Image (cartoon, rainbow, N blue to C red; front, side, top):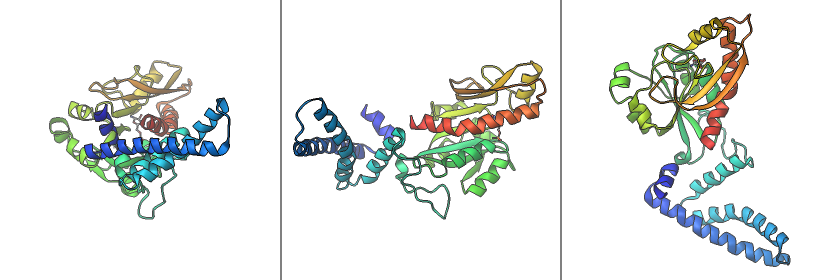
Length: 302
Ligand code: GRF
């Protein structure tokens, strides 16, 4: 349990002890202050008393832990912790706590230890990568920290340059028979990988290093039209040739088999008799752009 927390918060053992102590002291302080304040209200003990007390301690608790965290040097952890709860509850917007920064859109002021650093792997134009970058540009908890590409000259590399996001052009030998760039990813604090039009198979060295932390988008309704060679235009041609009345997108976890991991999300569109691979590709791209960033965010804030 403690180990899981340590991993989840990405903190040292000592820091975990301090955090737990702050939770305990902050909690006691909240209870104490709540009772003292209740005495001022002269409400009879009963249902109303309980409701007011719960409301009161809900308001006091964030302040109590923030105050207690100060002398322990853990203010930024708790500030971000409370902010994360606020975002989940819809009390804060994603942008709260982030100041716009002239030097780069990806810079936020929060504790880097609580940030999820995403690497986007892409081989092509990168329109999905661009949408994801736009979506998380001012996000307080999620940051696009790296673009990984296997194709020199791919549009996604230009996007990385324009957006000031570091990029790596990967080498086949190192990727498939070497360390799969795991050290480079870990060094940059990457904890989640998004495949957005990445055409190489993911080697087991990578899936093992990031279990349950790699997702892919596929331009069809898996399990149909998946597997080796089923990408981009080939998928749309197959859907039209089969006379399917609908197609769509699938966002799924990545394992060692092509287009096989557990499905996270699907959305559909109609295929008209007049559709061509190009018009279908356009519909699919629209679905991808609309859904992919939001699904990633939902998954990471879960
Ligand atoms: C997308 O349709 C995605 O589903 C597929 O490759 C395409 C990438 O497009 N895997 P883009 O490079 O994001 O524009």
